[in-house]
Length: 151
Image (cartoon, rainbow, N blue to C red):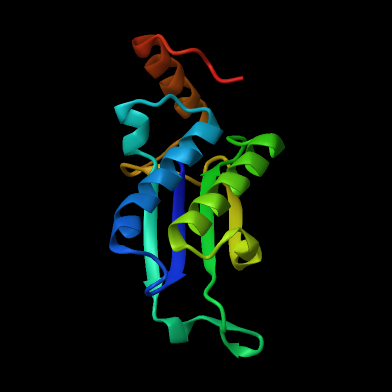
């Protein structure tokens, strides 16, 4: 049940990128979590795009001179190892830079903030969702599709 929110200034992304990038980022998050690529898991992996007016984005010096992006990623605690977090951060940064056209030298303008949601603090359908329930669902989905568990 991962979720991510991308915040960028208006005009940073083309209409095509606005349609495709949140889904591409959610799919990357699923891969790095090691979740099965099934309709069920794709359906509970959300990506939201927030566009702010350019004048609403500031640095300590005042209105931002160069556009920047913030990617907030929320996953259940324990879903990502340090290795997986590093790979996810690298891939999400590249996706934003490619979609925005800012170029690979603008990496410092893309912040990825990872939030591990403590056990018992994620809920859906009016109920607490426990990480073990997600693991069991992943095992069941893999059995249906014959997919191997991630390394």
